[in-house]
Image (cartoon, rainbow, N blue to C red; front, side):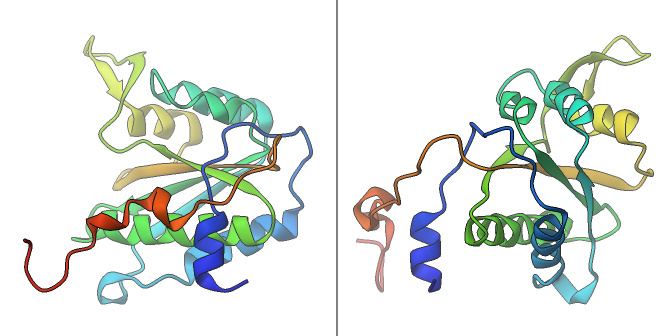
Length: 180
């Protein structure tokens, strides 16, 4: 499939079958994240692939809303950035996008679950809500010095997905020469 067709076909999928994702396909999706460009080749992004459905279901509670699709997901990839890098957000975002495209190519649905700047329902020792990233750190035991950009929710789509048409993308947002 050419890139434009792949982009047209890729849609956010929030409802999944119960079918597990084959391990080799998860490896291929993670490999796509590894192959993305990285600012100054610092490789500031790390991935935590989770296949345990009970653990994924717990991850869904790291934010008050919009994480629910994780409860149905067959797998999830937590995308973390090393805070010492000036461009960890950009590096992590590129990796997320590449993994979303690879999942689509493999017939696997995906959805970006935003974590950065989100707050958990869980209360910390200071009486204030934990950040969603800190909540996930307690659950998944990743080291200090990392922040979660997002979680990639993965599963085989429960329903057929209609490809996007170019008109749906609002092509009027492209400006040529000057903004007039």
